[in-house]
Length: 317
Figure 1 (cartoon, rainbow, N blue to C red):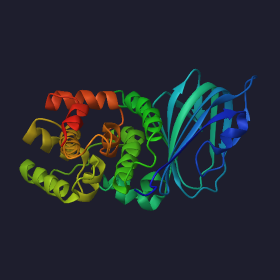
Figure 2 (tube, rainbow, N blue to C red):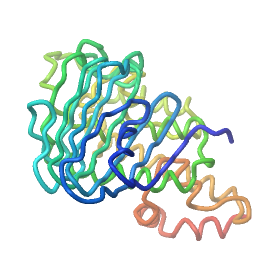
Figure 3 (cartoon, rainbow, N blue to C red):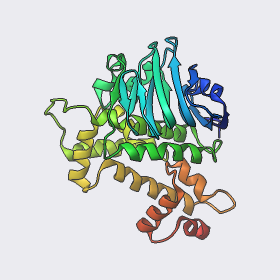
Figure 4 (tube, helix red, strand yellow):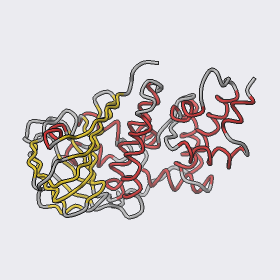
C-alpha cells in the first residue's frame, strides 16, 4: 500500500510550538498567563488536506496574518475559561470559519484545546456537492461562528482526538480509498454543525424513495470493496442529507449512516472469512473499512453476526 496518510504528534514545550497550531499556516502567539506552557500538537495530512489538534495548559493570544490562501474551519474542543475569536464568544464544540487571506485574532484565557481543518476552496464542490449552498465558495468568504448543535457537537468534539489517536497506529495500513473515507469523516465531524444550521432549501422535488435508494445502492456496488462516506454519496448523486435521510428511513427504517455501517460490517465479515490470522488482523481490516473505535466495532459486529470478528478470522480456511 502507498503512503496516503501522515500523522505527527508531539509535545509542546513553550508557546513557540503553537506557531504551527494549524498545519501549513503560521500563527503568531503570545502567552497570557504565568507558567510553563505544556501540551500536545498533532497533525493529520491526507493529500493537501490537514487536520490539526492542539491542547495547552495556559492562556494565549493567537493571531494569523492574511497570507494563507486556504480555508480554515476550526472547532473549540474544550476550554476551562472564556475563549473569543474576533467578536465571537466560543463554547466547546462551536465551529469557526476563517476565510482565505483573512486575519484571525483569538484569545484563550486559560487551558484549552481545539481542532482545525485546512483545505483548498477548489475542493468545496467535491466535499459539499449535496449542499449547493456550501459548495459555493461565496458561502465561505465571510468570517463566521456557528453555535454547537446539541445533538452532534460534543460527540464530534470527542471523536476527533480519537480519530487521530487510532490513525496514528496504522498510518501505512490505509489504501488511497480508505484515506479518502477518513478525510471525509474528519470534515464531517467539524462541519456537521454548519450543515445542520442550514434552513430548508425550499425545494419540494424529491425522487421516489425507492428510486433514490436504488441509485445509492448502484453507486455502492460500483465502488466495490472500498468504504464510502455518506458525504461522498451526497456529492456524487447531488442529494442533500435531508433527502437521503428521509428516503432511507422510508425504505429501510434506518438512516443512511446506519445502512452504510451495516454494509461495511458485511464487507469486513467477507474479508475476514477469506483471510488467515497470519495474513492480517481484525484491527487493520476494521480501520480500512472505516471503524476507528475497535471496542465499539466489535460490539457492532457481534450484535450483527452473533460472534466476535476474531472468531470469524480464526475460522477462516
